[in-house]
Image (cartoon, rainbow, N blue to C red):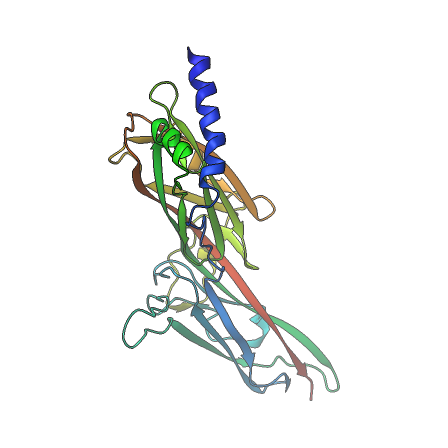
Amino acid sequence: MFFNVKAKLAMLILGIVLVAGCASNDNNVVGTANGLEINNFTTTQAEIFSGSKTTVSLNIENQGESLVNAGNGGILLIGANEWNPTNVVRAFSKTLRPANTFTNPPTPAGQQIESWTLTAPVLGKGQSRPYILTGRIYYDYLTSVVGSIKIYPESEVTAAQDTGEELDKSSWSVSRGPVSMVVTVSPDPVVVSTSGDNIFTLQVTLTNDESGIAYRNGTVSGVTADGTDTTPFTIDSDELNIVQLALSGLDGKINLNLTDPTCIDNIQLVSGSATIICDVNVTKPVNVPTPFSIAMNASYGYYTDEQLTITAIGK
């Protein structure tokens, strides 16, 4: 009897491919990366005589769709120790919000500009030396996917096959962030039997789409407003490339559970990406087509940087 149930369900799933192939819903609306970006990292003078002063400026802007809270992360100037910089460590002065085009007038993306006054190191007359400076930002971010899914009982699939009715496939809305996320379900649409195992598969693919490095969120904190203590920016190697997932919307009106709740814990990006597959169990019978929504949130820290070169000239 168990074999017959599984075989029957397999035939129904094959039928879904034909019935739902022309359904109107797109599977995914994918974000286009971005996050907290360095708009520019500039100096007022690319060549400067020993003992003279120049100003280095860093302009950052939240070009994603998540908040950057002032308490997590910060800004670091690297490579300027010989230039007597004024506090290489800077904190975010405020919460940097993403742009909001739905307000009237639209709200622009949050920005912050930091500047350092530098004094060129002393060199012998006729000598010159290029210095590579790095402006780096650390921040916590969130990429979110919201999905709309409909579960069909096998009786509805059979009826749809007979009448040629279209079945609704899942649809997804994805926010922008440096780590992108794509979520799919299989089969799509989801079909369950009246008896036997009612399990469908949830697949999540995470990709580092920007040039920086991800790390476990919350790792960089306690940065002082202005200072020289770079200790908070220390990240252990086992904290790098870690993304934490959280799933909400399950255990709702149709009683869904991850068969293994740990399948979404501490995902490590290997060569910039990772794919996980989780089984979801429908714990109570579904007698009519039933829509539900889920949200998958990916939390992580991220750092990225820009470089510039200043040449000191002895006099």
